[in-house]
Structure formats: C-alpha cells, structure tokens
Amino acid sequence: MGITGSAGSAGRRLLGSGRASDVYEIDEAWVLRHDREGYSDARAEAELMERLRAHGYPVPRVRLADCSRSELVMERLYGPTMLAAFVAGRTDPREAGQTLARLLRQLHAVPGRVVHLDLHPENVMLTADGPYVIDWANAEEGDPGLDWGMSAVILAQVALVGERFATPARAMLAALLTDPSGLTEDGLTEARRRRAANPTMSAREVEVLGEAGELVRSFMA
Image (tube, rainbow, N blue to C red; front, side):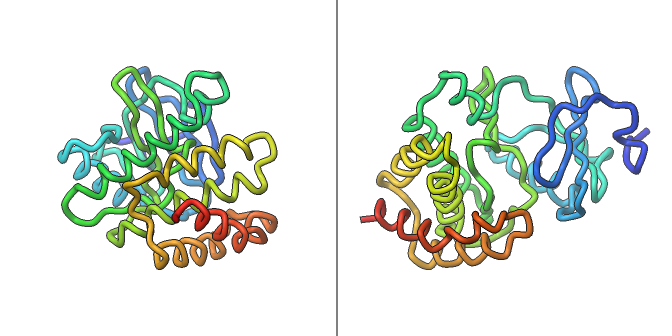
C-alpha cells in the first residue's frame, strides 16, 4: 500500500526542512520528502532519478509506486551534506568546488541533456559510497552551460551575502570554474535571469545578482 496523500507525513519524525519542502523518516532505509509549496512534480522527479541511476549517476533510489505529485519516497542516505561536512572541517572549499565540477561533468555526459539547475553544497550528500546528488525538482533538459551558470551564481551570491560562508564560497567558486568548465556567457546570463525570478530568493539575494555575475566572470578568464 502506498503512503501518498495528506497522511504521508502524519506522525513521522521530521529529519530536515528546506525552503520549499520537508523530509520525514519512514524507516532506516527510506524517507519521505513532502513539497510544502507545490513547486514541483515529485512523480516526474522520481522517474528522472531512476533514469539517471540507470546510467550510473549517483542519485538515491526511489519507490515510484509510493510517489505522488507532492511526495517523493527515496532511499535514506547516511552522511552529511557537503555544506555540513565543510562546517565540521571534513572537507575544504577547494575540494568541494572540484566535487561539484565533477558531478556537473558526469551529469552532462548522461544521454538526454539533463541539467540539475540547483547543484550546490546543500544538495550533495557525502556518504560512505561517495557523493550523491539530491533535490531534482528544478531539473530539465537543457544547455549544460546554464547548469554551470546556476551553480556558479548560487556560490557567488553566497560569497556576497553569506557572511559566515562568504570566503569559502568564493574559494568553492574558483575551484568550480577551474578548467575544464562548461560555463558560457549565455548560460551565466540565463542563470541570473532565473535566479531573479525565483520566488524563494530574498530581496538582498536578488539585489546582488549583477555583482554576482561580475564575480563569476572574474574566474572565467
């Protein structure tokens, strides 16, 4: 029997929350992600994750039969996010940036031109089996240059408004864009446009997008 619908998260232990979703414990092997805001189609996301996993890309397993538009049932991963690992001193900014770059290159080698469009340190889980990429709600088929642009702009915004993480975010950005990078000027422009239109952005995050673009360009030369 599935666990979809409003009862899916009822009585379950909350493991974490993001800007638009909450993750609940099912058991030691599985978790339930509930979309609070209705931004994504979890069923379509699950189908994409299964396709990527079939090509060897590091994404969690999903239980398609238990997924609905608002609820995604996926493998429970054990390990910190890349951001948490950095805070704990288990990884450094350069290593984190290089890992993000490797994950982007690996993704863009999968047939079908899939782009994640939200690949940053909070969406990478560092497990005993290596890094896994989560949160495919924004994924689509598109230009790899845009994917690089989105990751770069996200890090640049943190470098400008993140205070505590500003310096390491700048170092991650530099490592991300070390050759070979797939970033293009068109990708950067479109990434800035999409970030400006993102309803989860704060006014300050939108305000620095112009400066963020210049910071990214400073590492493209």
